Image: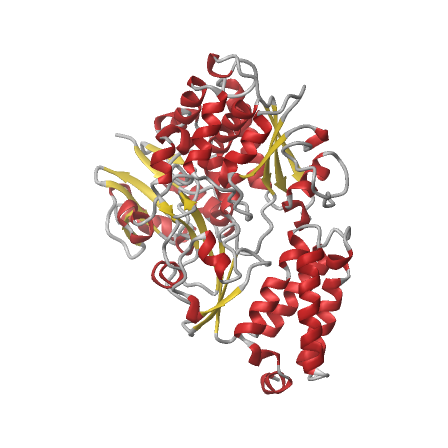
Length: 515
């Protein structure tokens, strides 16, 4: 009887030795009836490299496994799920996995990412097949009724974008996936593309059908070479199986999909900058209106969504809008893929319906700080997200609840800091980051961020603190109201939140004490 062993091919797992573990398993099991599958990561990054063995009871995990430990594991009956100090138990029964509600990540870590048969056997293409049985307008209605909002950061209702594009008449329409995942503490886009690329392909094809588009592009950052390679291979397989190209699944639908690699500019995470880059130009923000849905790529109507938004679509269509909308709370429906990073004991990916408290996710599932010191601050939503103090950990993970606190969920990245963090330095970093990554098109962002760094330096040095604090407040207001896009418009969020909750870090006395 063949025994199946799973070793992740995910970049995070490979960075800590997963390839060497796979090589060791192949060498030490030569001649045995073994099937080695390179799956995606389960998202429990503190256990990587995590290997799994298929047993009659289910998949048993061991981790973190080093190449040197493979021989000892085999001697301890690894193939039968035997006891060992690295054994973590049945994967599906671990609290981290058991308590999630995985829709986007339902197959990530479960299947071979490049096996079409695996994809179909685990529910793949059910969403597209149902979509093709409906009228285009009905597909748009399903997405709208589901309450699905953009998972890239802004949280704009996906169905409204699709409806706008679908109702326009044009000789060419596009679907563009923004996979330029540049926020600090975010890695879900990469993990999904490396662990279940067909899900993204299916979601984009459904979007193309609904909008009347015939061509699509995935804009991937150059820092993700494994994701680029995996997605390109998956697209080739998709063409071979009739999931892309002419007459998709015999429906008469045509949709061609391409991968384009960006050079790593953070600003290209903004949709109009991404479109400029796709057109071969420097990534710079466009003034809006016109919006991309009307005048997008090459001036044509364009659906622009994030990876997780498009990866949610197959589940919406397969299970129906009502089932998806039943998850979450108020205007935040469905699930979000949260990513735990920074000073965290158990970092990784956790997909759950909106509504769980931030503290439960960070402290119960994340295990609190890795250092063991008290938690002091959490930044949610990337480098432009607000810093929340430990007293705000009861905040529900919900778009509106965060907005009420002048914070944002963004792409779901959560970065944790303990009580040794210097929040004045973090506020300065926000302004410095904006200065470095600004496209330079608008003055409030381009110049304001540089002045912001200078002003914070004066404040912490004790130089005319009251006057400079007032000046910093005015500068943040100007950047918020006057910037063309979220780069400059949201940079004040981390600065103002640091001033509000951690004002003591900005005093000259505090800085002298630290030195």
